[in-house]
Amino acid sequence: MKILTINVIGIPSSSSSDLIEANIFQDYDAVIIDPESLDKLYNRVDYYNEEENILTPKCAELLAAVNEKRNEQVSGLLQRGGVVVSFMQPLRRCSYVWSYDGEDHWNSVTNYDWLLTPRDLEKELGEIKYAKGETIDYVDAGHPFLEYLNTRPRWEAYVDKDACKNWKILASAFGTHVVALVKRIGLGHIIMLPSYYDYDNGELLERCIIKLLSDKETTPQPGWAKAILAPGQEEFITQISKINEQVSALEKQRESFIDSNSQLERWK
View 1 (cartoon, helix red, strand yellow):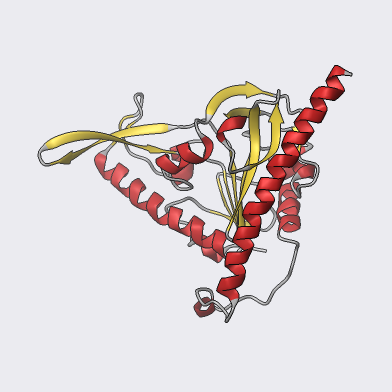
View 2 (view 1 turned 90 degrees about the horizontal axis):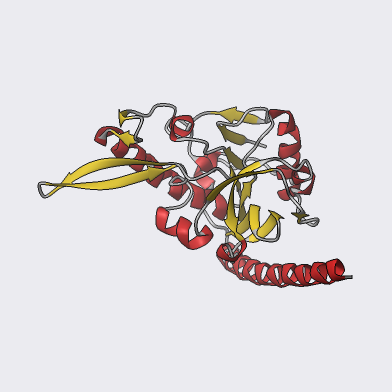
């Protein structure tokens, strides 16, 4: 299995890089990224004013172009059944000024732009909020990442339970703070894990990814074949996407029943 890591160490089958220099995401079976900061993601960031997180226009233009390209590659990797793992870090935002028609305008770059556009991020997850915590009192026992989440990693970011309705909750605290979640897109998965990562758990994390992918060994495809769909494959992909949506709806219903049952258990 081929894994690309960015700002993550300890994964046995991985090769490390950054968002600027890394090969196209579709070269890999899985991409694991810790978006701790722009500096860690891109390896080189030029600031106009570092204390106020203001980028130079030239640097901002480069990062925006990289993010647009990587965003497309995330979609491509997911459509062919790959896995994108991101640790859930607090939102980091850097501003920059760009000129248009002789006027200056402010814009920004965040540590999640490579994964989701700002509009999609708000739509999918609402606000990624900052708070430090160690409590994880719910873990999805049926997901391949159970073993990793059972290590109860600390967290510094969360999303509100009501804000991520299109995602499956993998781990949460207090019934309100979601610290790990997953979404199926195409044939692949986006997984967001609690903020803190211990490199000693790298092998464990890789095993979870292998389990998620069912550890199926296939003959490596030549480069020219990756963009080709076999006869009838497009229909299967469409049907799988529809079934994934139905499964997600059932999983949400299951979580609702589990919550209701837990409330009754506490009442008893």
